[in-house]
Length: 320
Image 1: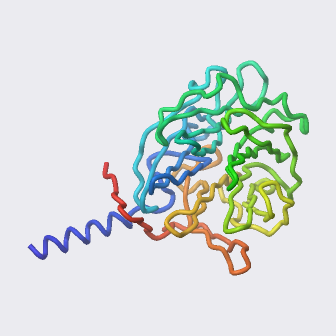
Image 2: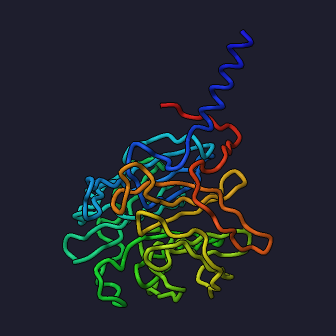
Image 3: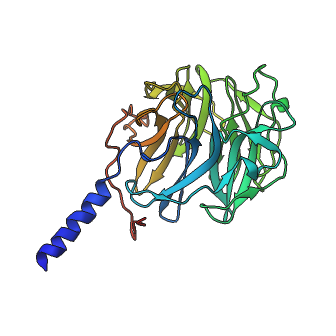
């Protein structure tokens, strides 16, 4: 009986430690967005469907996973796809999510049917795992609303942030970083669109706060590395601080998200380390992120093991 109990404990310990990078070896996934809610981390990824040797991004849906220990991930299927937005025609590109007043708002990059170029839509759900429905019936941002560049993909990669005073912000962009306030309903811009000058901005902006400092991070240069700046408010002014993660091998992008969970911080990103991986067949991974005593972020190396298990109170791994 004792041997059986010990065997069971050892097996459970092994299962807690079994997950490693990349996180989801059965699928090619990219562009992670993360939300901490109810003692779990919810991770939203785009699904790369490009065939071997493909020459373009082929992405039709987003998928969601959750974990209470940063090691064991439960798959919850696809909470929405391109067809969720009746005005969109293709491309389930990068996204972000926030919770407000008991509802979950999902901001997504898609290709617009009628307005040439990429657009940002917003979907809403009563659950972090969906299903989500179009919250507006129209795009929140379309390519004709911004004129800073002549490319059709400059309105991508939404990043939503709700400040301590309740004011919500949406950051986004390619080549030029833009932001706008959101109204309390989370589905309308509240005022003009602003541009932000940061060092060698390419795409994938992300805004988070640690203690009293605001951190604006982004994909810098192309091929991309993850860089960041700090500031005293959600709109800066921003002071460039350096690189968090170096450029990938095998894929030019690196899109990231940062969360605090059970007393530690984590950075999600993607690379091309699954067998058969590459530019259009990426794989999401995660590492622990650490702050130095002066508030700067320590450089984060990519690892095969990923972070150690970090279960919170009442953590129950959902087996599948």
